[in-house]
Amino acid sequence: MAATARQFHVWVGAESGALKAVNLKRKEALNFGVGRDLGREAAIKVIAWSGEQKQVLLGRSDRSVQRLDLGTGSLSCSRFCPNGDGDFCGIAAYGSPVVLQVRLYDSATPRRRPVLQVSYGEGPLTALALVPGGTSVVVGSARGEMAVIDMRQGRLLRSLRGCAGSIRSLQCHPSLPVVASCGLDRFLRVHSLQDKSIMHKVYLKSRLNCLLLSSCQDLLAEDSPPPTIKEEEEEGDELWGNMETIPTQEPPPKRRRKDPQPDP
Image (tube, rainbow, N blue to C red):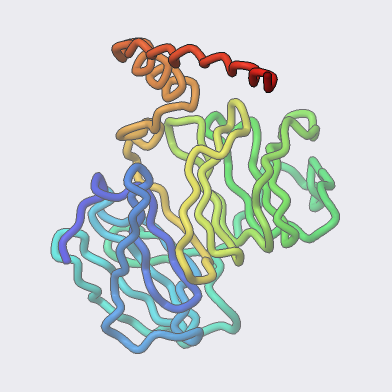
C-alpha cells in the first residue's frame, strides 16, 4: 500500500506490533505491516523519519529494526540488533546507518549535577518533547498528566488535560503550536499549545507506544465543520416563518335549548 507523508498527519507505533497511519482531518487510520506475526514481542517501541520523510524507521521489542518505504508501502531492511538489554529508547537515521541507546554530556561545564531540576505531578515522567524555540518542554506522566514547563525559570506554564493512563510518547510539530500524545488509553490526541484545547482525538484500538508527526501544515483545519445548534434553530425559525397561514373556521353557534312548556 503506497503512501506519502502528506496523506497522513501522524504515524503511531502500537503495542500489537502494527504501524498506524492517521489522517486527523478525516479521523481515519490505516494499518501497515500487518502481514507479519504481530504481538507484544514485536511491539513498536521507537519510530523516526528517514530520507526527508520518505521512509519511517521502526524499532521493535524483539530488537529488530525495519524501514517502511512510503512510496511502495512495504517493510524492508529488517535487521536484528542483539547487543544490549531492554527495549530501544531511541532511533535515528545517520546517513544510511541507523543509530540506537546514545548518551550526550555537556563537556563545557565540570558540574555533574543538572543545572535545572523541576518536579511535576505525582507520577513518574514517561515522555518529553521540546517545544519549537527551545525555551520550554512538554512532559507527560504515568498517570496521564501533561504540562508545559518553562526551562529558563523552571516554572509551570500550563497543564494540558484529557489523557487517561500512562502517556508513552509526545511530539511537538516543528512549525505549528501543537503537541501530539499517545499512550495506554489507546487514543491519539493533538493539543493546542496556545489555548490548551484538544484539537483532534482519534481512537486507535491498540495500546500505543510511540508517534511520529509529519510536517503537514493542514492539520489545524477541518474539512467540513458541523453546524452549530444556533444555526439549526435559526433555520427552523425561518422555515416556520415562511409557511403559508391557513385560516381556521369558526365553529357554528350553539343552538339554545328551549324550556319545556307546562301542561295546560
